[in-house]
Length: 77
Image 1 (tube, rainbow, N blue to C red):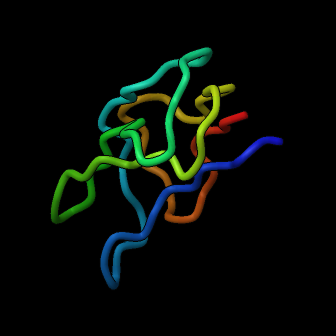
Image 2 (cartoon, rainbow, N blue to C red):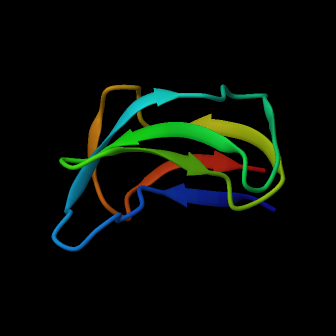
């Protein structure tokens, strides 16, 4: 079963954030709670953790891309 990872909303009034860099690549195994990306908002840089165990299937946005919160950014199988 696939899990879609969405851009989180860290803080009130945050409407978009950037994928600063991916820490995992397609095909990499990932554990629940393991960091998969660094996300940059107007206020901070945070690590985005995987909500599930699995394998990264696809990164939907490139590093450096700014996307709206709740927008899909990766898929983990």
